Length: 58
Image (tube, rainbow, N blue to C red):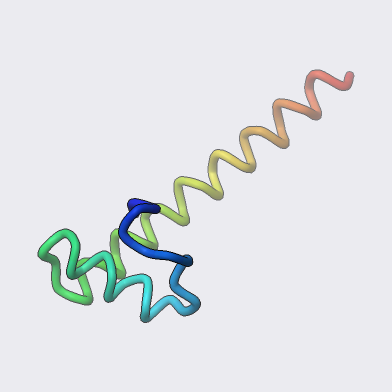
C-alpha cells in the first residue's frame, strides 16, 4: 500500500482489500488472501522479535 495513494489507512478489512484489489488488478478474494498472508508474516516477525529479546535478556 502506497501512502501517497490514500490520505488515511482504510478503516475496515473490506476497504483495505478493495483498495489492494483495485491497485493490483486482483479479485477481492485474491486481495484478501494477500492481506492474510501479510498479517501472518508480520505476526511471525513480531514473535521472532519477542523471542530474540527473551534470549538477549538471559
